Image (tube, rainbow, N blue to C red; front, side, top):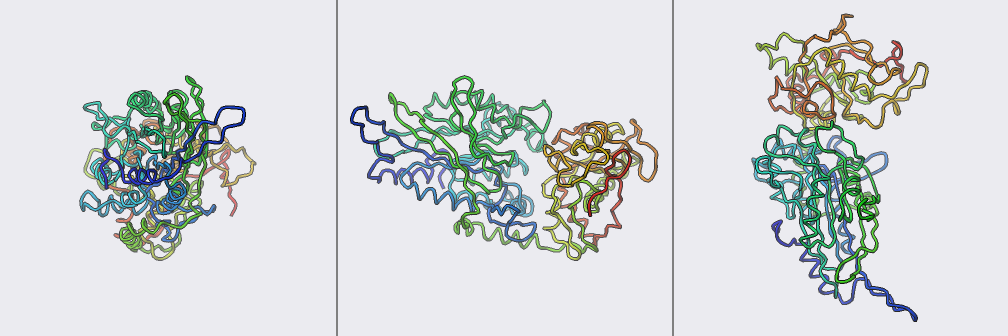
Length: 600
């Protein structure tokens, strides 16, 4: 493993291969009989991944089976490595770089196990994503927002375990204002015999939303600056320091909108970066989990067409950017650029990656297959978006119990405790019979911790109104199809249900006027604006994730307990999961007061 500041093993291999090449990469075309010779050209390929989210094997830890979906996608770094190595072999002696746009160490039971059950900060073991990515041998990676989920010590150790630089130019030390991580690298690339060295600048930008989503880990330590302004600051510096071309690896989408309010810089500014910052040739981006094969954005200052591409999520896709370059007046010029997308379901998993992570994978599989309780009936989450279901009430019951117990004997003990839960997974299910850790993890897929705040009756209503924007407006008599019931711009994880009050959501009414009944449980006594409650909430939401109103306030409970583990602990203690212990139907969808009927 080489240090981030020195040449990588990949650089040395490329240099050795190109030095041995006996001919230029792309021979100049013969001169026309009556015209000038065509300029000699060379080519560069840049491969890009993003949002791998702890996926190494093509494996679904929640189902304990090979991963598959309706489109028959495959996942994992092992699959990506096979594609990357195929392209490296095809281009032997030519220049190929590999980048990643972030969100790497969170998202699977494998990643969680080595952050929570056997944290690498305690054992000193190499993180499975470091093992896998070092086999693939990246040239640079960008930090995504989920890199900060487990605290800075674990992140810093993971970075030290990598054999290549981890970039985040807009993450700065809150005390000194200096970059907290490497802002950029300039890699010297050998394009082939007779070609001067090409200097490729790579700038990394992480997501400003970290300041909200992981406030507990970064507050007072890191500040996250605007991605557009940061690019405008560093791109000229990279050019002045010799970068012939500039690439950006950005963990942010391209929509120009944010899931939070205007108090933080834009969450998804990639198109704005390309449009507003001169000197950028291409941007690899992630965060939104979309597949964007090739999108050009015109820079308003220079007219340059900036190439952008996003390779989906979890290792399902690999972006390939191809650049053709020529020399004019001792300077490199890009004469063409394009992007294509490769599907990892076309290849087998790389055996070296599998071998590097096999022991950790097997340990994780054994862990998630531990039985925690017996369920008296099957509890699916299929209908949880539009019906009150026992499996979401299970989350609310556990959260309510934990907060109620913690507040006993305090000044808040007399307040009713509400709880929020979102339908994170449409496929989660507790089977009748043995319920295993993987089933609980499949229901609660995020590494959130439990917090609680005081909330008023008026704030409860505003919160529910905001959540109810999730649904499309459907008048009385309009057909109802669960598949198209929700507004696709609002993700499932940003639709919350609340236990502890009874309410109706009238989807025939405009957004903001949908909570037509909000009463104290088991009564028809309306919740008054001045009523006071405690509400159990996850740290993502309490910190401002999703931009819900009335929830970003000082916690009265915050013991840094992971909600997934609390669900497991409750099941293990009870031994039996019975809806009679926690299912309280308290909300429904209506139209003009008439409950919405759904097809069986």
